[in-house]
Length: 99
Image (cartoon, rainbow, N blue to C red):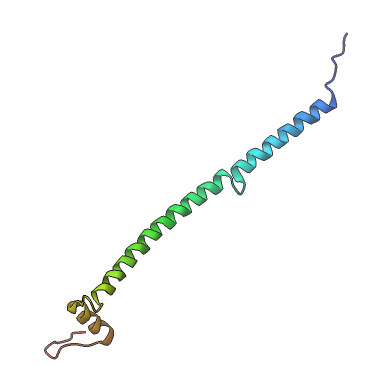
């Protein structure tokens, strides 16, 4: 009977190291700081911040409109009356207030 030659220890160590490094890099590509899961989190946060930015831009446009309507160049008397009633609690003499 003939004995089969055993593989050298160096070859086994090389493939074990290569396999271990492959697993490590695959894990890092999925779970790491720059991995797939982190990228998905960043994309979701970017979408949330984009929608928040759109809401804030709408609110800014509304306030710019109100400010322009109360400026010296373009005074909106209805808006001025509304703000005086709301902030100062003013009312006309011919009005009845129901609470």
